[in-house]
Image (cartoon, rainbow, N blue to C red; front, side, top):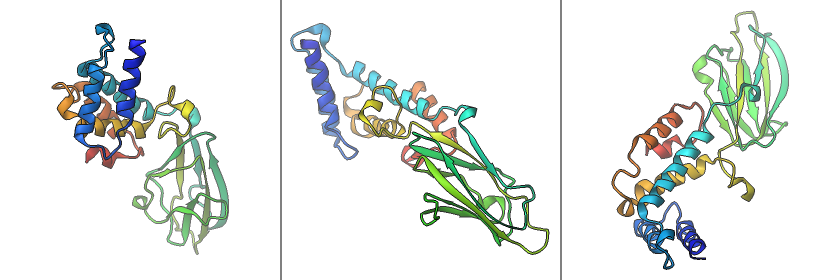
Length: 239
């Protein structure tokens, strides 16, 4: 039918773009979508409508992929406070199906120099994510690109003045990126939201109606994203 023809033409034109696509390619994609009516005026897609759909898509993915995590999906790991001066133990944190994990440390974290908390992707602690020791400024949030990680705490401190210890929470990030085709229809993707934003701001400007992207809807979605702790790709949005 003419409507299905319009849809497939629009999708094909947009799908051919990439992060390095030229502005003319983006403009051509919108132009093709606007003229792909197949002789049926009701089926035509104009640039204003297409840009509105893309902006809505971009905002939805930013909001959904960074919405607060259910408290039941948070795992807590901590030492005693204060911790034993001489100890060595391990543990694991796992969220089945997560595309990434956000790790946040308690602002009270503090250890002696001879006490080290190590995070790693393997239980042998060879693929190290980070090592944490010292004052609170050393315990910075980290994003783990896996659904699990291991931790080990080692301490050999003489005496009793060795600090508060450590405490961290881990939350799953389910909307970082699509890993399977079936996820595209029902799950959010922060990576896709960033690509769409770049496309709309830098590659499709000549074909978009005035004010299509610079509006309150996009601003609110981006503010919420920037205020979300531990989420990745912020440097791409700021740049």
